[in-house]
Length: 165
Image 1: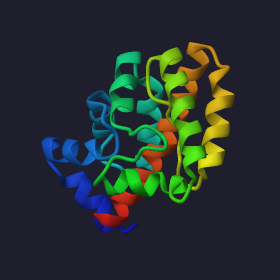
Image 2: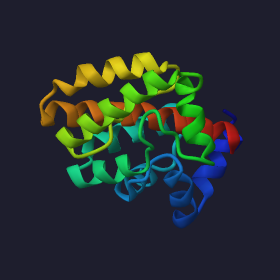
Image 3: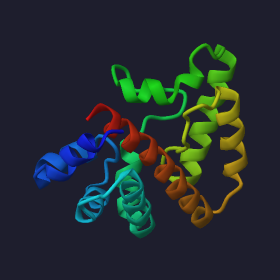
């Protein structure tokens, strides 16, 4: 990351920055909280703003954030971010993808939202194992796990935003 990238983001007007942040997280509340932490002195300060915002999101805001994510095993067609983050499912066999789809359906029926995991660097087998493990959580524990996974995803996306800016 260059200080130029961070300076550019710090200098954007609110609506321009919100548009950039929407590519990181689809919760408008999250974007507003991160924006209000400007100016960020460095990437660590931007990541701290992400962590603080994630910690403060209400249930509806978490729902907004999850709405921006594709179902694991089914990256959004034409979405480079979705494809990159779920690269671990590429090359997975049909049987494994079918298991993943069924586990996703069971999870969604239980929790009422998509299974969310920081998929970067994880194989389809790893994600299926995590999905099955987390299925045993109660709703409150799972909501907090999702919050942590979203924070990790946002950090990766923020780093990418800084690299591309």
